[in-house]
Image (spheres, rainbow, N blue to C red):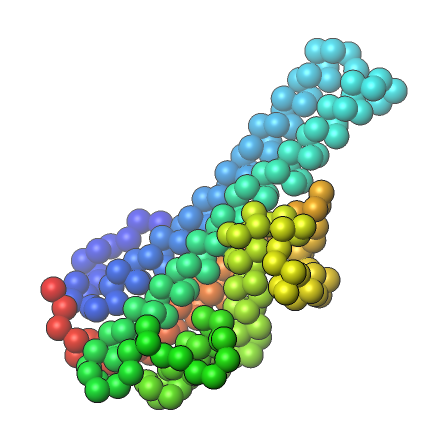
Length: 231
């Protein structure tokens, strides 16, 4: 997607966040096209190999080639493309939420900073953010419960991917029941060879939800952040 930079307000305090949302949307479309391209390329190679070797389904080599092909296109490719993307998607959400909190708080210097905000118990980033926005900034961070539920799922998967490479055996024992329940209940999320796998529909839906939430958050809070002097 080519953007007309002249259509943007260059004094917008959330301009960089806005551009990052556009960038990750393009990034998602790119990786899905790349997965599809590699799958087609590998299928052509498989067909050429079968023809050149004159293989039939009765040959062990045919079975082996088919198994290797499906292992690559159904497991390895989606895992190595979609897993890192989900980590990046969550990181963008966290960074924009933090940026807006910091900018909005800067216009009220006597209020508590987001980085110093603690409440009873050990809250995850999403819960801490919701409480900070509500108590300090008087902003409802996410009113859509279905979107909040998907963000919480993304948070858990992000941790499993970043800290355990998506390998269930290495997921923290305290978090494993949560992750397993998400896999059981969420459509298009599964396991393969001991790893968490994400289908195209799940990633597409999650991307749409996160991008919509970020754009709404940026639009709703642009003016409250504008009062901060920007360079």
